[in-house]
Length: 402
Picture 1 (cartoon, rainbow, N blue to C red):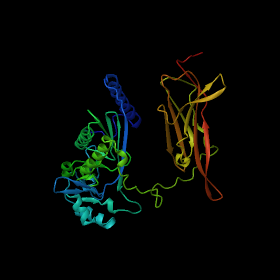
Picture 2: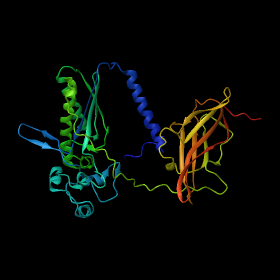
Picture 3: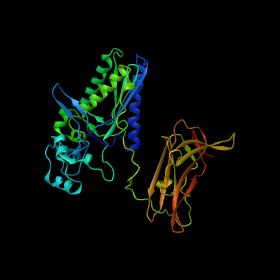
Picture 4: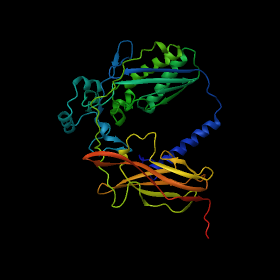
């Protein structure tokens, strides 16, 4: 009975619940902590070509990683989010129908790649698919930071529970073997730097459930990572990080970049209106805990381009002492919501909500919306800024009637 979309009624509610639970546990751990972390800071980093790592598994045998590939069970999805096609987890044989489609559209995997990934039946041989750009990374980074006795291992993927246990133990043994570290605490920081899907144990890989089919560098992926992170830990323990080879530099893609999302269309507005005009106005008075809502004639937010240092929304309070408006919230604030609704006839609107916190000061407020709309001048599209402002409204601790 997994619920993949979170425990709340919507993404905001789920974020609040999950964030609050994390905060409570973090505070509990902080309040009950008995050991202070102190000591020297160490750092180690390497680039690794994960398609060609050789691992010595015993005195006589070596194994290696593979070019990236995804198996049939990858398309099956997981228990909390299954696929809609006739794929199932645990597939160790291909399907003639889907393999035929793969061969016709994307090309058949090479014999070498198929043998390397055995027993995974390959659905997408992503390491052999390079148009218009490589479908999966070949060069990834391995990284480790130690703060006193705590080691943070930055892993470029999602480790299964057992993979994580083995990595933690391997790093701990290596750190403590030189005597410089004792009673180390190793923490796995997954999905760091670059994403390479899952990292399963060799045994889990043989079963080829979703995670095994998504272990893109083959059955010895974990062994390769264990070897690389042992090397980082050894260099830190011996204080010889400076001797670590940097490794092959990853490619920097500047050509053949593309966007599957079509350009935003020309924005239009209702007759006798302007962009930024208010369609649904605020009420005159609110209390802490209420939700203020105002709707504006809007353009497509995509026309605003890169506004990472700007905002679509401000909530402002009037300062009687300076006769100015001061921003108290932006669209980065938890208390605000910005909803864009694409309507008919290329018209759209934006609704701004302010969930008034119980700590909000009493006073006069207004809500402003900033955006851009696309117009056509001399047969060429141009993007122009606009802004809109709500009526002034009051936030009071209680209502007063005359």
